[in-house]
Length: 264
Image (cartoon, rainbow, N blue to C red; front, side, top):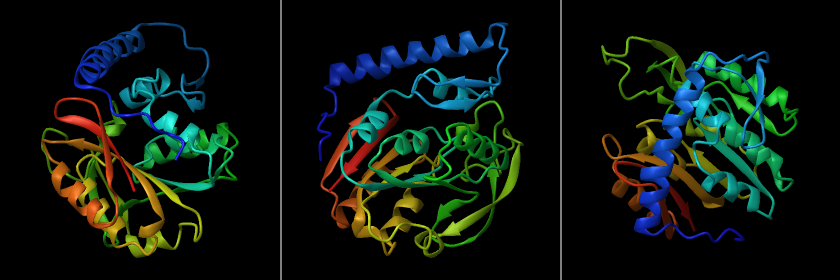
């Protein structure tokens, strides 16, 4: 694997995530709130992909101004062997688009269950002429297929969650399609190594369990996933992945909310 960037030291992590990233989020929110002229409805993200503008959405703002950092984007860009990308919780498609830019990426499967966000995902795929590589799937991923209510937030689409759809403080919700792992398996390429990204706001443990039951499990070479200790047990996820052959776990971020890159 050509990508060998180590997880940052404790001091570097505090500076990068506790100081720089926090200040960047504040800057982005303030800049997006200014009454600036915005003549175009399509923008170029600082990650280098074209996106349909959605200025009131904080998730779009973070995609536009590269607030999410460069760990996963650099990892995808550096990969120099054939692979397929599986984007579980694709939102507006940032990471599927970045994966598709790599000539070694043969295909990307992007799962997004929320209707309005899925429409933006499809728009962004078209804007980047990536239809030949990226297949958008209007569904969430879980162990079993079905229908479920998901809480949504139009001003921060990335917080859509199956976890708190009954939360009265967040009345926006919609019914979504859940695709069980047996259905997911039929969509994945049969030969290539798989790189998986999981960002599902509290449903991570279930998605990892689903991947562990996948017929493609042994071809998953890396999983990049989000942890929020308020509702996700990092130790449970790591133990489950270790039981399926993952040996390296690099943490990026500090506090209760951070990312992990797991590799075999």
